[in-house]
Length: 373
Image (tube, one colour):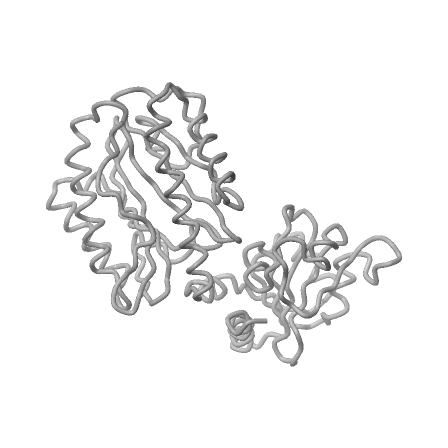
């Protein structure tokens, strides 16, 4: 296990000690991967990483017999833990169920830290290990994950570069008649063909007023001329993702959008310039609000600037509302202080940055204009 990966476990153990825990159990896929390197394509059977807090012992990967080859042969996303326990229904497995596997480590009356569990799992856990206390550690784990190591940053950079390469094809594809879902399909196909492991989140393509339903899927709607087109796209490399948003228009964009476009880029550039360790989300939100108020478009802004990203698309910090997070070196952020413009949709570009000791490094190009086709 590399030093960076040992540090992840050490921080988790230190967190557990602060709560007086006996064990920590991680079951969210992104946390299992973060603390072990293991992934499976379907999390329909129990998989978890078990970390002892009070006793000195190796962390344990617990997985289903169905993922035996992924665990033992390490044919994809190889885990780095020294100890792995498989459970399954046949005689070759010591434990028939995941509960049997957990019984080998847990005791009644323990203090157990978890990242996220469903109520039925909690209910069964308390019945099997009576007197136990369950402590929610998800916020603590997200804080551990918030600062990226060199390997994580390099992987996110690669994901950003490839996502921009795919996005660069969009103007060419828009020159021909195409639907929202047709454009999304071309982007996804090209990304996978060019080396992406997967699409990081569902590719979002929207035209006109539908843009304001920000997370709506691409539909079989023809992309029309003289209408704004918003494309949000991210792809995945070795578990880590990118996030890019660009606004396009076939033909002449609505006149009402042009002042918003200029206000947006002034604001985004100001945020890039102020991003450095020690700056707070509150200061960034105030800066954006001041510019938008001066530009007369404060009402078009949703009081949101962006978010962290790495293993999932929306990670802390969530730079919005009354958030007061202090920015630290090696955070990776997606900056997108978007503006709405009914009935034409809205305007936003999203660009990723890494926080450096004295500022920020842009991981995407920061295209400074509405893309006209």
